[in-house]
Length: 169
Image (cartoon, rainbow, N blue to C red; front, top):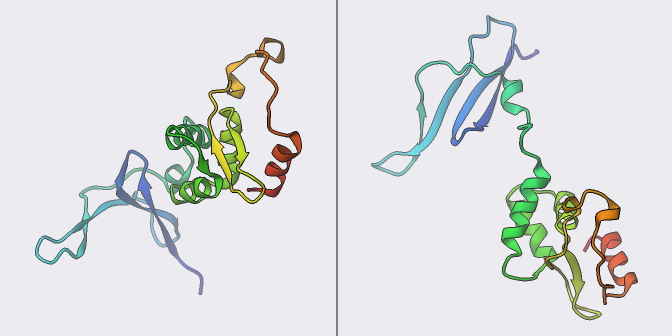
């Protein structure tokens, strides 16, 4: 038997504590909008409870699930990395682990790190890879290659840096 109605539950973009229950498919009746609710704790036993809001939500499931066109995920990742690495180098594995917990994919973090002018470093032959922001010029800070500042040569052997990006440290 095929489903006659299906709903999506998504976090409200303007209020992360609010959830929207929106119709995705309905061939039983006209669509009249969705519902909104919040989760809270009951004061007497601290059990989760659902508090339904009055009225209908006039947002489609497609609108609620669409990414916000004004925010680019890489820009969010750059901002997050700047905060994370502000106090100094951190092992790249820890960056990826922490980033995954807040919703960033490894590939996005690598691209954001490059955009920020970050340098991966390896401490010794057996040491772990670390990430640090060196205060270099981010990619988009200059308009064209002709306007880019001259930088001093990097003391890191080129082979070591090239292997870092290939092996996915």
